[in-house]
Length: 276
Image 1: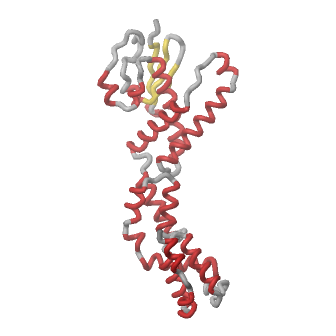
Image 2: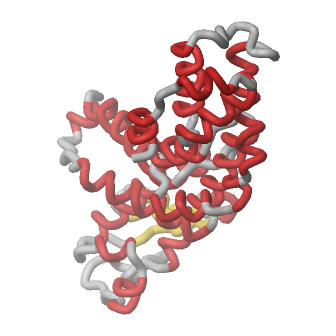
Image 3: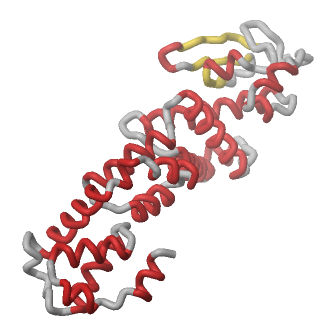
C-alpha cells in the first residue's frame, strides 16, 4: 500500500512537494494540487481512491488524468518544470504565445534527449516519453500564461508594430510580414494595423524619406537622379520595407523633384506585382 508521507507547500515557488511512501517525490504547481481529481494529502491512500469527476470536467489539465494517480503526478511534475522554464523566458521580455511554445518544446526535448543517454535512465528502465506528451504540456503552460496575462499576443503585436514603424521606419506590409513570422494571428495583425497611427500618410512619407536619406545620403548624393534604373532601385527599396509601390514612387519622385524622370518610370507591371 502506498500512502502520502508528506505534503509541503512553498508559496514563494507556487509549488507543492508530495512525498510518497515509496520514496518518490513530485513537485507540482499549487494550482494543480488544489485541483487534483483525487485526494492527495498527508496519510491519504493513493489506492482505491475516489475520483472527483467535477474537477476533471472543470480543469483542462485534468482531462489528461486516466485514473493512474502516479502517472498523473509525474505528468504534473513535468508540467511544473516547463512552467518554471517559461517564467524565466518571459521575465525579461515580452514574447508571443507561439514563440514561447516552440522555445519550451525544443528546450524540453533537448533536455530529455540528454537524460536518455545517462546511465541512471537506462538502469531504471524508464519508459520513453512520446513527443506529443511534451507538446501537450507546453501548450497547457502557454494557455495558462495567456490566461494569467503573462503573455498577450495583442499587446506584443501593438508594441512591436509601433517600434518597427517609429525606429525601423517599416511600412504596413513589412510590419505585417514580421508579425506573421512571429506567429501572431492575421486577425490581431489586421486589427492592429487598422489603427490610424499606422495609416498616417504624412508619417509614412517622412519614414520613407528617412529610409532614402539613410541609404543615399541627406540630399540623395549617392543616387544618380538621371538614371532611371537607379531611381527604380530606390523605389523598390521602399517597397521591400513595406510600402505600396505607388506611395514609394511618389516619395522618391517628390523628393528628387524631377517630373521628367518621374514620368519616365514605367511602373505598371511593378505596381500590379506589389499590390497583389
